Image (cartoon, rainbow, N blue to C red; front, side, top):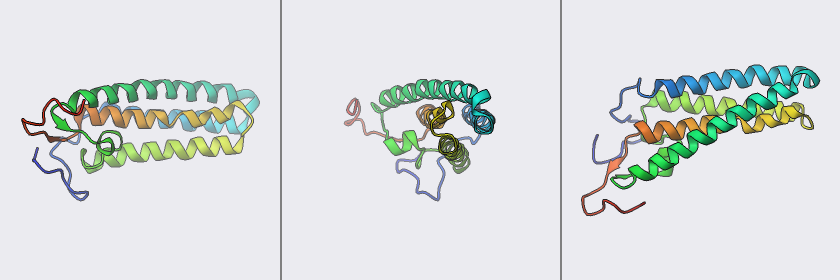
Length: 161
């Protein structure tokens, strides 16, 4: 790790396989939302409840992951310059491939959720808007566990908590 943060064109020196379980979980959640959302839009009376349950589950997992990522980021901030963009959106803290994969899963979750809610606004399918919390929470967890943040000088340590 270097003392200066990498530019947008550079990737920090982190193994691209780090946190692959989090990346896979984000894509699995996106797939679950796709299946539940399409079923709910196609037949809200039959599958609207399924869409709501899946979306609620993804939201709950996302909230737990987000809170874990936030708490771990606070702990790391004692020794490193943890930024909100770096922690939650992996800006300059993750390899390009990780940033791309987690951001694309998050973006697809947002598009799927909004599309389902717009298609069936006054049904339980509209609960799909909760699901993208999964993508945000998993990015926060990845950033907190594996992100490359610039270390603080010894005189700065202990501040920022």
